[in-house]
Length: 430
Image (cartoon, rainbow, N blue to C red; front, side):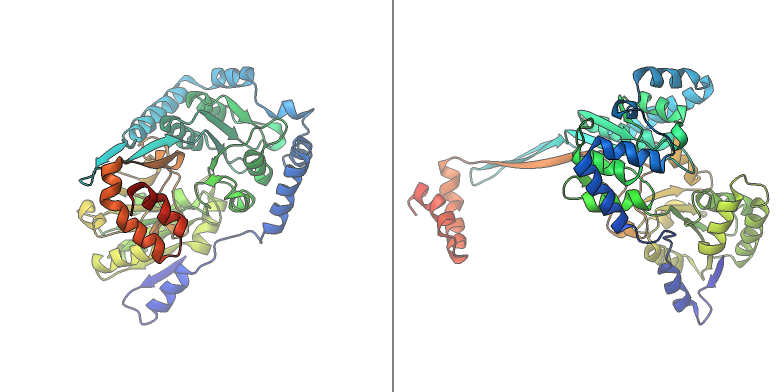
């Protein structure tokens, strides 16, 4: 864990090094991913069967075995304890309500010149949702990806989820059922992304692929972009916690570790105006690491990528936060709304000492699929807009064309595009 202080002469260089810190724990995989995509494009289902046997350590009998059956989903739902299913239902209802509130309306704009213009929104036809497997299973990711797609009006929603050793988490299937997804494929990695983008004999291609994954999944999404749309290239998770000296150090420490336990490459940063809190939180982190089940992962993340930054005041704190542009921002100060108003770049913000980021991971309502790696400077979290596209339209009668057409003719001829000019001029005698 790094300790930085804006009062120290070497702070500027140390902070730049923090910003530039490489958190990719995997070697470049672009060549390997290109090979996998080429195999899926060329061999279809046969490639999926071979790659699943190789990477997920189970051998499907045929391509049909890659699809999760209705009976398997029903059995999974029945196996989930009632209390856990109720928690899933609460999360789903809140996520749906929040995303329904985002839905945009079509607009029509009458024009004084006599034209009418507008914007029409419509959903993509098919969306493929990647759900991570491996170190942990994430039913919450199913809800966060599938529900916005459904709310947006996507007609076909497909889930791809890796099943190491052939095992599927029942709660993942229950979440898919609760979100209304019936097409689920037990495939993972770059091969799943390739199948969703290009299709195989068994899997029809989609138009948009969303959801986080490992380095192979991220690189595959990068390589298929253009063939299909994608949400983002997700990197390791991160949080910045802004906390003043009145906060409970143990709670702040646990909020930091809630991100650190995701992955050894995750990053948790405390920014505080209290040197005493900085010391207390650092000690509380070490105490918590002695008892957490995922202490190995969280401890590695904290030691390699964690940081405590002590600032003179919250003017500095807000400015440094904007430079960090974090995926998650927790604001734990006396007036969190006022401080948040001074921060421009964050994927999602959690205001007040009673609003830990983990609340947003599961049940608050806003999406937890968020821009990482400082990309909140220009990107936003997943929403219904990721599954919508807009079409502009123009309606013109003769009066409108005569009113503004001559200007278009002049501009077209200035660009040397005579057919453009004449398509208007021949109508209005210009």
